[in-house]
Length: 472
Image (cartoon, rainbow, N blue to C red; front, side, top):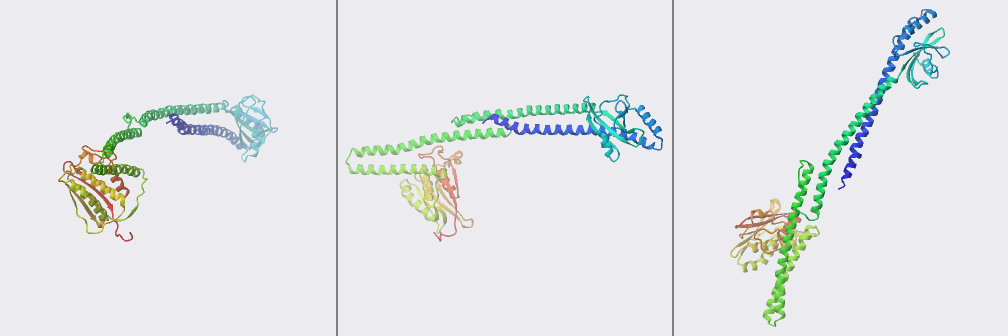
């Protein structure tokens, strides 16, 4: 796990988005504030010039001399000289007089006069910089009718203070944006680290587990998704540890199981090699064949289970009479039960019970179940094979019930696990019932083990039935 990649993803994703949003928000605020301030300044200057123009319009009945005097008096008595400069513009386009008495040399920005000429109300505004670099706002009004040589009046106000206010707002917006970014970075890094550091610990522990250290456990101090991940990995390590123990037990058990027949085969081979007695040779041959068959069955079970676990075995299903298949298995075990002093009871149903199954695998299931029952049933005991056919539900259950030593309660749920051997288990690889469970599951059925220690064991598999054997 590359912890830096999480940080990079956060920077590219969350932080970059936050910065982009802040930039857009700051630009929008600056534009809104600027437009608001400029609009307020424009409204103020237009209000003043409209007032002056209204006064002049109301005095249109006066003579030109009287109107000129009125205009100069208004200029002299102008109360907002600290905010606006009052100018008279002549018919030649030059400034004739100002309320401050200062005659500007800058006459290059009188295009607002032309704008006023083209305006419907004869009033226009303009923003420009003077030759001294000062930013100003002007409002020009054409006098109708004109007075002597005065063609228009003009109000001028500086925008430096307005721009100063705007710059303060921009600076505040920038500081707020920087503060938000810094807070986002600090809180984000804290959040990222709160994830990255535990993940590093989890990664280190998982690496140790992957190397076979199944006793490793991750300390879980988290009450969130990380906590659940820690629990999952700890459970995985625990189960892997159990599997490792089962594997070791299985290797030990199989080694012992293989050693016993191999020792018998080797011993009888040496005995047969050193004798010419026919009875001894015949007895040795029977033992060798029997032990070889036992080894072959053990290896075959192991291979079958491995293939079923890997889904490499393809079942060859066909229509079968389940009653006939069970009967063959019972007949096969009858001599062994008789020799061991065990009663084998099977009441064969009269009707045909048709199932869609793999014949060899179904036989393998019955052989494993009967072998397990014979193995744990003492002399004088009884084994029952029970068939429960339920036509209405299209299902049939087959049970192998014995009155042997039974299974401990805590072992019942585990006997179908691979390599598991409960307390008091006899020789074997520990995969017989696991193989039965896999085969029945592959047929779409269900396998259940019931037992009470010291009394009985009942193993039942259930399959779906079909209506007829026609078309076999």
